[in-house]
Amino acid sequence: MASNACTSNMLKCVKRNLFSYFIQCCGHSRAQHSSVKSGRKQLIILGTGWSSYSVLKTIDKTIYDVIVVSPRNHFLFTPLLCSTTVGTLEFRSIIEPVRNSGFRQSAHFHLSRAVGLDTEEKTLVCESVLKQSLRYTLSYDKLVIGVGSLSNTFGVPGVSEHAFFLKEVADARRIRNRLLHNIELAVQPRIEESEANRLLHIVIVGGGPTGIEFGAEVYDFVEQDVARLYKQQKHKVFVTLIESNQILSSFDDRLRSFATKKIKERARFDLVQSSVVEVTEMSVKLKDGKVLPCGLVVWSTGLQPRDFTRSLHVATNNRGQIETDSYLRVKTSGDTTDVIPDVFAIGDCADIENQPLPTTAQVAEREGRYVAKFLNSNCSSDTKPFKFVSSGMMTYIGGYQALADTPEIKLQGFPSWVLWRSAYLTRLGSWRLRMQVPMDWMKTLVFGRDISRFE
Ligand SMILES: Cc1cc2nc3c(=O)[nH]c(=O)nc-3n(C[C@H](O)[C@H](O)[C@H](O)COP(=O)(O)OP(=O)(O)OC[C@H]3O[C@@H](n4cnc5c(N)ncnc54)[C@H](O)[C@@H]3O)c2cc1C
Image (cartoon, rainbow, N blue to C red; front, side, top):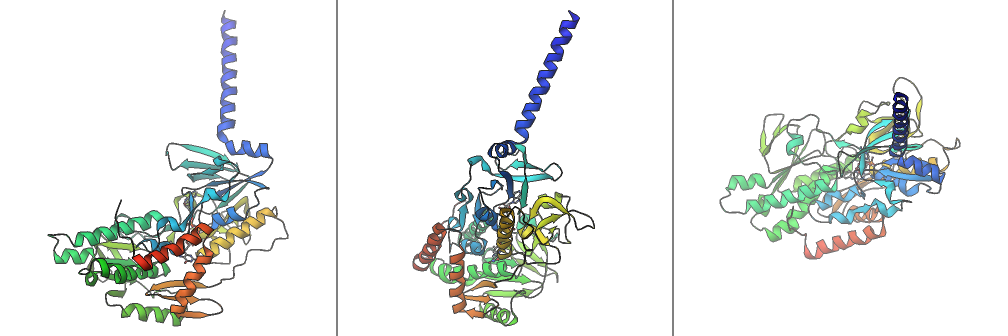
């Protein structure tokens, strides 16, 4: 009897172990399973921004099973994001669903974020953004990290809680709602004059292209729509742009002076050279102690790494970006020239050793294309290192005026605005967007911006 019981227990144990091994194999790598079946190598791309989307569009899908993991299921055309904050463009006119890029299987796109990486085992831990308790592991043959970055608060108290950032469509939507909320509240009975003035005071922190373009869009909105629909409020809307150094510091001196002059000429627009030391629900405090009551603070002062980037055990620079060699392969931590096999990092989250580049869409897109071609060539030793040659920068400053700073020409004013619009129109990622954006521009010109408010 005892030996029978013992044998039966042993059998149960073996069965349990076999079962758990089977579960582990299936659960551990659904993706691994498919690559074994297809015979193709498995490429995982993290993110759906400029860099990753560029890999996705260029990669040869006959060589790789391409899996994308991102908390966002669309590509966002960031250069036109500011235009959506006031309704010059609609949100859906500047985003492209990534599933339109043609995945081999519907399960090859994961609406999840990467939360851990094991470069020895070549596995990635992911967490669903739809169900937080859902965590799983994917195996890769090649991995491309293009997770971008976050806005940098520089530890200034109150920024995370009270300021608005401008990186995603959801941010632009929040800003648009707050603007419309404040304007409507300012006209309601029993709202005192001082409170109305506070509500209609917009503070922009950061004089880089994003801060300037947001200011430009607000200026157009006030001149064209607030003036038409809220006649008594037009002269109450006030914008203060705070920059600790000079605005548009990466632009040519002459163009920068032109922009400064144009902005300073605007009646209800102030450029302040200072830094912010605290943001509260109703005000901004400057380093000289001055307090500016305001109803909206938009914060655009630089970048910091995401938690996932911080969690990696790889080489990083002093800004926390992942350090790569000139083939965009991630370097191992420590004082070596070694790289981690089959792991690439591109876009804002990365920096190339001895080739510091600006954190722009232009750089991110080219890096993505380079990595895809490198992978398509099976990382051929004939491939030349990545080299970036800038094709210039452009920014909109409002009132149908822009700046174009390219190696060939330096252009300002209305001709530059025409160039700015045409350049971005041709850069839009799909024919759908190329149709939708000019239609929005036309609608805004003819009927004005849509000021309907809904959460
Ligand atoms: C308002 C605005 C205007 C701009 N205008 C211009 C311009 O005119 N010209 C220009 O050259 N540049 C411009 N830029 C800068 C440009 O947008 C960035 O440099 C570019 O987006 C960087 O691309 P990226 O792929 O590195 O990151 P992003 O485009 O930010 O994409 C990062 C992706 O990673 C995903 N992700 C985040 N965390 C994880 C995770 N843990 N796991 C997986 N995925 C993750 C995100 O959801 C996102 O899809 C602008 C930026 C902004 C915000």
